[in-house]
Length: 163
Image 1 (spheres, one colour):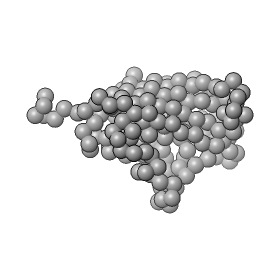
Image 2 (cartoon, rainbow, N blue to C red; image 1 turned 180 degrees about the horizontal axis):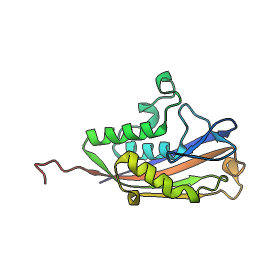
Image 3 (cartoon, rainbow, N blue to C red; image 1 turned 120 degrees about the horizontal axis):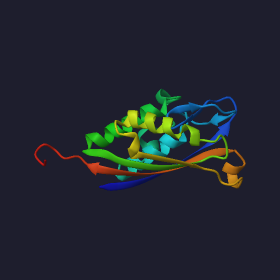
Image 4 (tube, rainbow, N blue to C red; image 1 turned 90 degrees about the vertical axis):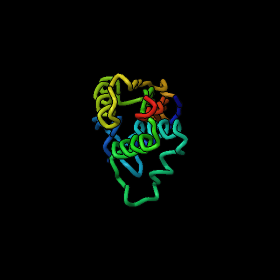
C-alpha cells in the first residue's frame, strides 16, 4: 500500500461554469484554469500520482499544452488512473475535502462520488468527500477561490503468478 496527498486551488470568476467532482454545479461563478478547473479532481489526481511517485498533475498535463486547453478534468482523472494501472497499482480509497464558502456542496456529494467512481472504475464507497467553509476567513471566505485537499491509498495489483 502507498499513500499520496494532493492539494489544488483555483480562482472564482464570472463567466465560467463551476465543475466540482466531475459534475456541473449551479453557481454565479466558476473556477478559472487551463482545463475546466475542477479543483477536487485535480487534488485527487495529485494524491494518486504522489502515491505512485509519478510527480504531479502539472507534469503530466501542463498548462502550456494548448492541445488540452479546456479539457474535461474527468479525462485527466481517467488518464491518471490508467497511468497507475500501467504501473501495477489500483485505487484503494480517496478521502477529500473541498473548502468553499459558497455554493453549499453537501447536497451534491453523492452525485460527485458516483461520477468519480464511474470514471475511476471503483465503488462510490471508496470515495469520501467532505465540504467545509473557512468561516469567511481568507481568500475562500471572501469567495475569491476554492481549494481542495485529497489523500489517496493505492494498492499493488497482484499478478496471476502472485495470486
